[in-house]
Amino acid sequence: MSRLVLENVTRRFGGLVAVDDVSFSVPTQGVTAVIGPNGAGKTTLFSLISGFLPPSSGRILFDGTEITGLAPEKVAARGLVRTFQLVKLFEDLTTLENVKVGRHLHTKAGLFAALARTPAARREEREVEARARDLLAFVGLAAKADAHASGLSYGQQRLLEMARALAADPRLVLLDEPAAGLNGEESEQLSRIIRRIAEAGTTVLLIEHDMTLVMNTADRVVVVDFGRKIAEGTPAEVRANPAVIAAYLGGTETAPTRRTEAGRG
Ligand SMILES: Nc1ncnc2c1ncn2[C@@H]1O[C@H](COP(=O)(O)OP(=O)(O)OP(=O)(O)O)[C@@H](O)[C@H]1O
Ligand SMILES: [Mg+2]
Image (cartoon, rainbow, N blue to C red):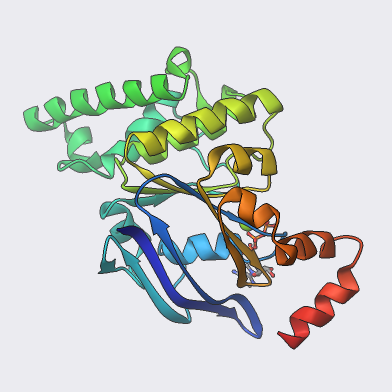
């Protein structure tokens, strides 16, 4: 069973085809990575899946139900959430409060009832807080619960962003370059957390440039270049794929050759 299915998904920006007729499935179990050179269309793909952009054509199915063109909050309410390539936190809130905001997406009473402080809302608030603390412990930030988000290191902010996304109890989480800007040790910690998210039953789809992290963390890899899917398989398979090697080398030494080939395709 597939958690997510993309069928011939295309997105144009004027004359530019940022995502070009892409089809692939994400299995319910495990971690799937989307890799590709800068500008390949990876983030655009995530925006299409999470409802931040409508596709120009094609279909997207989440657990067998079509979600093509649904608004981001509708998609999130169904259990599909994303993080962003650039960290987007509420800097004036504490670490704990940031996670609680992510949780309120999910609760019946919602944020406004929580502010109104009815008895039902107070009970819910205690549950939200307990769950938020669990998630902070899960990403290793329990000791930072009451610190302002702006006072966290960059690596800690990335972990907080992940905890906030998980607070909505998603069935599928999209992580856009979670290891960007992290040092080696932080990347390894992140890799372990991502594996544990998947083991706990949340499907993970991640974009990543850090190949060590991809090779250590992903069960399957989808490779895109110039908006098109050029390969798909296990990490070992895609690493040995000549089209993938050419795409990556083409980004530097052999750029003119690569452009000509893309023009033909
Ligand atoms: N809102 C937009 N309007 C116009 N063009 C866009 C828009 N968003 C992305 N693009 C273009 O679409 C292409 C794909 O961009 P995208 O951000 O999806 O690439 P990416 O694979 O995520 O790259 P990176 O690895 O650098 O993050 C690029 O050429 C980019 O300039
Ligand atoms: Mg991107």
